[in-house]
Amino acid sequence: MAIKKNAYYIIGGILALFSWITILCVLTPFKSIFDVFVRLGVLLGFTCLFLATFTTPFMKQLYQLFGKPFMTLHHYFSISGLVLITLHPVFFAIEVGSIGVFIPRFDSWIVFWELAGRPALYIIYIAVLAVLIRKSISPKLWRALHGLNYIGLFFAYIHGLLIGTDFKNPGIFITFTIMIVLVGVALLYKRYLKYRLQKKMQSKRSE
Image 1 (cartoon, rainbow, N blue to C red):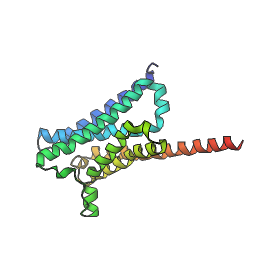
Image 2: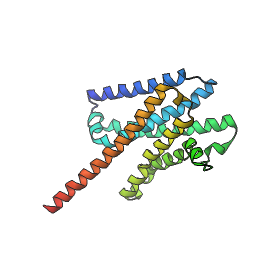
Image 3: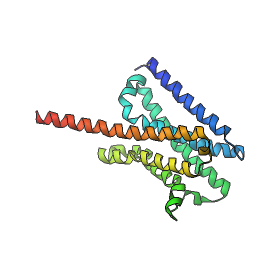
Image 4: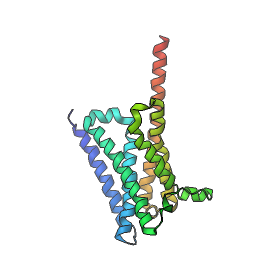
């Protein structure tokens, strides 16, 4: 199935989004080039996971536009996002000389949310890697595990909002706030589609 013309507009929009975020990150004051890569990695990683998550309810429409290549692109976003958000704490651990950055903190409510990126990492790992056991678990459990992406992205957003250097940049703040709102919209739309399907099935049974 060939990629349709309109699909290239979507690809262009995605490339523009990545370019926009990269430019904003570079324009935000930084301590060193290493610091830029640490921050840019997690911003682009979040964006990849956002795209993979946001597009989930629209798989049918996107498949019609992209054909099989879209599934490859969807998985690419998921894997790339996972790698990039992993590099963020790895580089930070190297910088501070401690593996403690991987351990969630429960000292207080505010500390937990300031460092919510730590549990977010594990939550997203579970959500993304659940695809490896998809065939050996029930569809209901698969949906629950894969749905953890929404929670992981929310945790990551709160972490960035509270202590993220780049979120001091209005452009970054607005862009990522729009992303997290769209993730919420996608979740609600996904639930609506499920509800509509259930109603349709119930209607057929009653006929």
